[in-house]
Amino acid sequence: MIKQCQILIAYNTLNEAQIKGSNGMETARTQIVSGEFFNALRTPPLIGRVLTRADDVKGGNPNRFGAVISEGFWQRWFNRAPDAIGQKLQVNNTLFTVVASCLSGL
Image: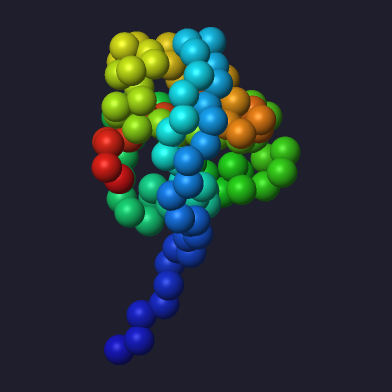
């Protein structure tokens, strides 16, 4: 029996990026993924929401690009505070809005 692909995802390799925000600046490993990435892996966020298809479309998210931060980054920068969601981060001079935190190592 041939199964059809239900969800198509895309991602790039890990890269280092300059992260700037109200809590400082650091170089961190980053990865760009498509909106269905976390749904395909069936990985719920620790807090916030996962990316969606709307995040793949220019202007699809009124709060700019969505960023899912690791649990470790959430701890370092935001002390695991819930108000990390909605915070702005500049990643290599592109503005992102934090929409979720997921387990580190994903």
